[in-house]
Image (cartoon, rainbow, N blue to C red; front, side, top):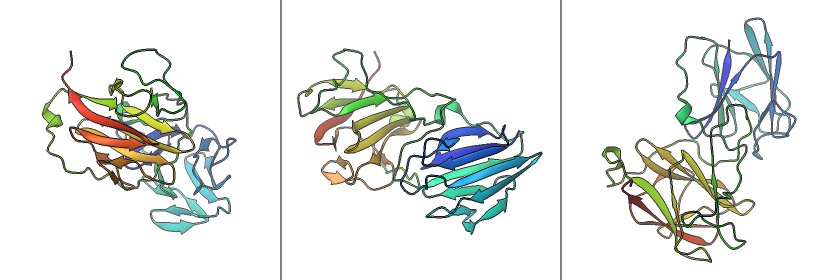
Length: 254
């Protein structure tokens, strides 16, 4: 069965099987694939499947719909075509024998919620603190959060995490939660205050990376604002998100 692979910043966000005749894409909640980003129109595009063929149609979107870099109004999708909607990419895969996507690469932020487990290693959700939100892969959700990066270029680092089993740890340096720690065991941890400034730290085989998600200003690492690309974290990096300073370091598993 044909499928769509939604991605952002080189990370797979979701796989959607084309198991219905009409799939709508847009920013509003009624869409089958909701992309909560201002670059996406409320009703941006539609994919209609008839037997073994799929047809993409732009819905008079503000920023347009592109396929393989070319603007389109209507387009008959071919295997491996890449639909571009703002910073997002949707790959059309018709070949059922194509390699499956590794579930560990999924980034699903549709149902983020603050941690509620009281622990000396959990950041409390005090009003003046930065919330810490963890994600578990949910294969049924399709909503994603805004994100600013288009190309994932790791920043060189002297950290030898590739050959080390050490885990990343965030320690709060300022605010009412100063001194508290969070061990980054999940594939994705979201930090910040929704509506003000949000960033994510992703745990990957070759390191931990921080990426800006929401807010006019970008998070600071060692006093300098990161750019739209994912930035690799190194030992003793100082991160500042939503006015809260945190230290990143490695710890050997117990």
